[in-house]
Length: 488
Image (cartoon, rainbow, N blue to C red):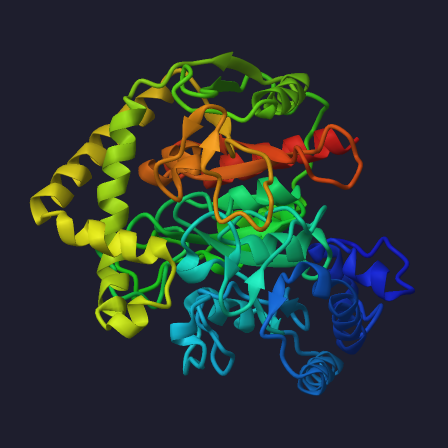
């Protein structure tokens, strides 16, 4: 556990603390859980109105009562875990017992679940106090956080720009010190894209690392992943240790209990070149296949130079797979999975009329595909996975930009073009994230700060550090090396 090395005297001091230092301070009784809760509620009341990151905020008196109870437990020598008394707000796709879970849809505006999703259950078991939810797009579709229930979430540096998505509320809450750590989920960059847009770390774990429970299907759905976001990769690792671990309710979940990530919370590089000898294959824009907004690759080059300064050997490499085939494979698999759950919801014309166009589009695509199409796409995905794994014969990590555009106008539903190339779907502008998604490999967004610190977020971006199969620990450790090395 981290040592307490800060003097805390005001709400802003508390909310600015690293989550591990916050936990240490609570357990050392440097301040109470009531003080922590009050500080976070004050910060939310002061800031959240502009950015709309936290939604479904719970009654303050009730939250303070929960904090009082947490203090009583500590006074009796009892701690639930490292999150004891620490506020959390799960993404509004995750079920929260007794707290409204809308999925950003008017169809579920009155849904109050009777159970928690597993990641919420595990956070509560570690002592977290659930204060509300974080905003997400309708049904999590699209990498831009807006919906008809709560509205849009603005970028942490500039509320007039997109926060990314679909874990946009969580990313903004972290960047603005409204939460110390946050959960999220990722099918098409939803942990990585908002992390890049808001200057934080978002980690997509290996497939099966964090059981997605409850789930209607536990055998076919292998694209959507839940995981951690934080202001540091150390905090990501600690939260992942809580989220990860086999569940009998998820038969394809990976063995273990998450404890393998605990040492990373206190990991420190041994020298100034902690990545010495590590080879990173930079795939860039796939030899011009991916359109990129002017300046994105230039900003990514900053991160590449930082990695080289830490000893890494960064080499350009062409993908050994056809990205156009990968995209078509993705369309079939995603629509099959999304359409399977969304299709029945919109059979009623009245319901169909109130959901966004992307919901109907995914459902229609699913209806137009056959089971043979789905099988062939799954086979193509297998071939793609084997091609990517082969690249690790020459590299320790692979790397791509996290996004193809910079944060855009929050009022825009999605970018319709990049340069002179038209985007033909609502998510085509995020095609760059498919390599980790379709391969099931672990990937971390390494944030690249804006070129001019003017608070405008006009060129916030990041790069994806992609690890070997089940190489979560290695990706997290390299991310810590990067974070510490670039913070000096």
